[in-house]
Length: 386
Image (cartoon, rainbow, N blue to C red):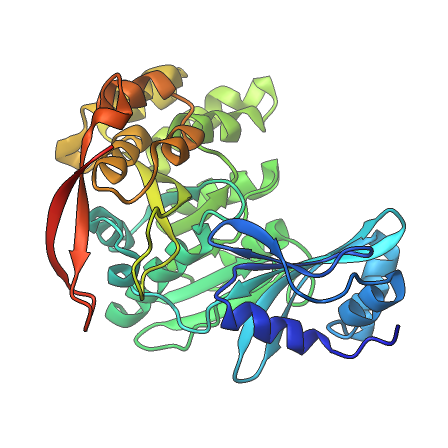
């Protein structure tokens, strides 16, 4: 069968159906992810030749060479007037496959994302290390983009980002912004960070803190008076600190604990949960964040390696705007935003979630938001059972 569509056709379908991801695999029709759920498109299964033609249409000659050498490739691809996509190309049973993540052309505001006020306060810090963590597809890049854009609109700073690949494209407002893409503008994160300290930055964004050298350079930059944002694939604040320390050999772990205790400002660990009944104009998923602010007490726990005790401090840290993931999940459930099954699937502390919502979740009285059908503004909330 001759392929009768091009990659832009699939991208257009992703945008029209408000999907987040597109999967191209030989032997299957293209799949898209809508509100967290994978669903097939109504197109025919793709042959290996068709997947290669679709995917290679997005790559330039240099990218094709890199893929042929490494069998894996990260890049981005944009269609003017439609959207930009983050692209990962890889091999699957000898055939070419790809996953494309749709990127919004509009950089979100913090109000759009309904981020807690403390997130804006963190973006106003003059120095230190702020980490946004979570699994793949949890909105880390979007949260960071909102924070960077807040700085861009309110302060005259030099902002330097190192990304793989570049996702949101910023236009300088009050700040001067330089964006460097790994593989095109720099060889790797570590090289870019070493050079960054000679490029007079005020704010540095590290797209992903993958290895010892990158983590060490990011921590050092935060120690020397820069505001540094970074991401890790961890699911809690305590796990984030442990992951950063464990990257180092035992002989260096005491030193990195001391450095982290002095430079770390906050950890935001987030996840996305499908809404029960999304209203028109709402996102299909809602975000839940665990927020740890590094107080003197938590700084001391980091220094002494007592990360297991952090959760208790986060539970009682409401005055500092801290919150546990379980408390946010419980609130979202009680408000009727998410199901209990979705909430329990996102927590590593199910007993704590049960304690917060009660022993029999189905009997908990929840609030259901009622919206004005004209403009979707909140009119009131009514109580519903189960």
